[in-house]
Length: 317
Image (cartoon, rainbow, N blue to C red):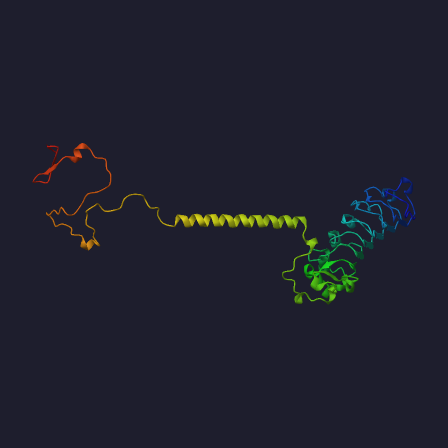
């Protein structure tokens, strides 16, 4: 059944197709945009083995949209605008899927367990980085030797795909068009074939990732990290300055430390002629400039008795 270029805006099949013996359907060159969960429900348990929906302006496919097509073996979704592949994990017999010319920026995680699918086509997408977080790492570990992927005409950032370059060195049999893969960035390696590069000889230090690396999450993370670092440094500086001030010495107390007028100045304690016992030298001042709270009685003349007991204000204590 061919419904190509018929201005279709929906992939929904009417109930009259229930029990159909169709084996091939083409909905290419239409303006379908979205394939909903129940669009193929009337085709449940049908004999459809090939489905083509190319150049159909597809933006989104519901995760369960293809479940009714239990006999489907080949699916072509070329030249659309798909960015995610949630539907890729729902096929029971599918052996080949073509997603050339879409807008995938990385390999979907649904490829981690390929099932019966033997060929994945992701040529001419927006894939720039393939690292050890990609499904290919699982293919290597699980030894899916019968599964191939095609990736030509993607703009690879080779300094951000060093793992993939090593992968190609030892496991190029997983990539059906490995000799066609070329670097787009950085400029030093632009146009170079990935299979001819040696990651150990590549100079990628100081090279910033390309624009696709700067995702929103990464930008926010870097910004928050930078702010936190600045705040931490500011706190350290403030605390350090405060501690220096505390350790910088004493604060001078105001007052007059000058000697009394006419009092002799002594260079050292050795020059100080401390009077002998029983002697009194009027030339040495013992007057203090410090203010004190005196009572009237404290200014009265004090006399000494032979026993050394003082009389004050004329009364014996």
